[in-house]
Length: 160
Image 1: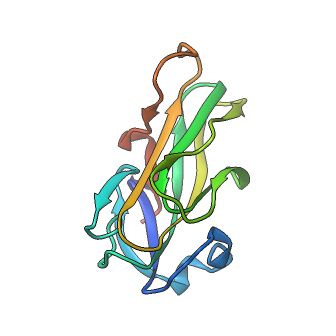
Image 2 (image 1 turned 120 degrees about the horizontal axis):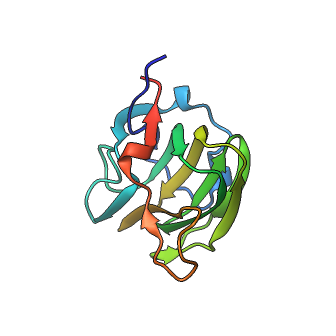
Image 3 (image 1 turned 90 degrees about the vertical axis):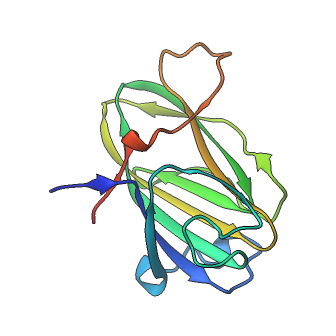
């Protein structure tokens, strides 16, 4: 099976969300498919949210695979405006689920026993005004006081 660059995204448009739970139960097929997110590094100010066609009232179901090239402990965090939730390999990892200005989530540790491609799902929404969504990691072996980095596009794939 061939994987394509980036993560697949489906949008729930022109709705006002206040919490990730308001749309996280929906199927991606219920949304409007958008261009893939080649990297999760968006700070769009008052422009369109991610790759959606609008600048307000957007929910996004983002999915695909992330390549975790080493075994060991990864650390993950988001910078977001507004709510966000992350699942890896079908397991809840972290969330910052409500309406808020740009802020960083907590940093969470994820233990990876075997290197490889793992399913990733992100639910994100932007209520109004500015939008930010950035996914950070610190790979195993990195110095504990080193800066976290944006997950690189080469580590993200989806089924076209």
